[in-house]
Picture 1 (cartoon, rainbow, N blue to C red):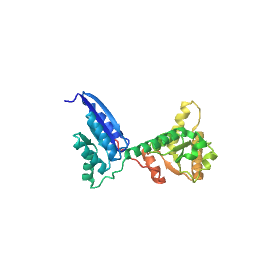
Picture 2 (picture 1 turned 60 degrees about the horizontal axis):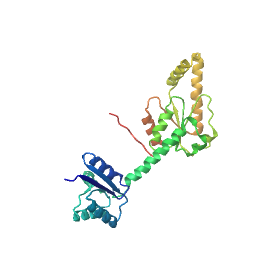
Picture 3 (picture 1 turned 135 degrees about the vertical axis):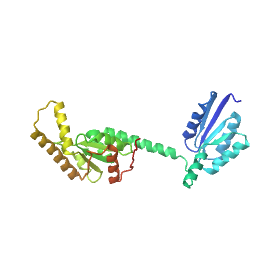
Picture 4 (picture 1 turned 45 degrees about the vertical axis):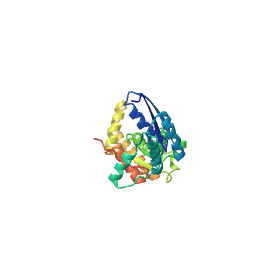
Length: 275
């Protein structure tokens, strides 16, 4: 019985998958354990060095080498040296192939490409936070989408939802006396723009609550006029900027987000089913 356990995690990409599987596995055993990761293994001579070292150190090999020829070569050399070697991707490849009738693409580093997608998403989130509520107009030209909307139309939550899909969003508030700045006007026809609105009854209730919160007296006639002017100003702006106008009164953020990405052919369209 071995008192120590040494695992070599071998990959033709960065090796994180093999290493994580190795870590998750060895933690189940109360034994002195160590893991060595070998990444970017793409040549037979590299495999030979790893096999010789594994033989010297009595190591187990866990590998995620995608290319069939090199994978078979490692397995053959391991058998010749009586080294235990496990291709941790092969069983799942076989199951997926049997289920779909498709052949694997055998492309190395696809998870690393997904890391690039993650980095792009983080950039989109950072951009969207920095351009919330009309901030940093000097760099708004770098947005993938500009969202303009009346108060309480969920501009910020919608922008963050889209940012999580990798879309850089800037949002700008519309009120009764808003004048759109030239930084946005100049982008008409260059960057997609969306105008968010809600029905007049909902907007009236929101305004009443706001007035009560600040204890500002306002009669119904003047409130009606204020809300009507606010909507009129919003629609004038939306028309001038050629925005797609979306009423968010009854729809949730994900539905509105899907509508936007679909209408404007933006990068992603995602649906979330909750149970």
